[in-house]
Image 1 (cartoon, rainbow, N blue to C red):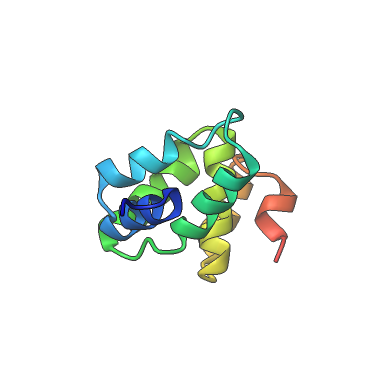
Image 2 (image 1 turned 90 degrees about the horizontal axis):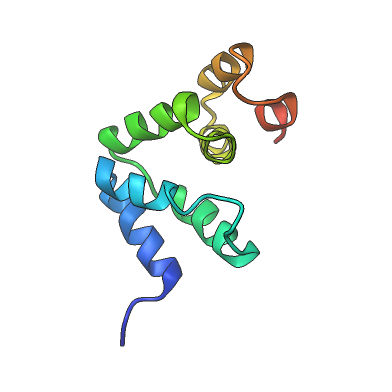
Length: 101
């Protein structure tokens, strides 16, 4: 039995490498389905490696708007509000993304 789409995204997130996070992030666009967006959002919560955290931070400051929004959610769930505030202060995310809980 093959791996499901959700399992695939979780595996990539747990790998936490630049290549694996890049693979997830390339799927964050306006063509994704609602289900895929939920899978990606859930899977990103499994990024825990130091390298993965750095890549997520990179995307928070240099990604597309949708990538930055997902990264803001990720860091918010981790309670890392200083980095979110920095992105907000730089105009990279809006108040809704920065301050929603």
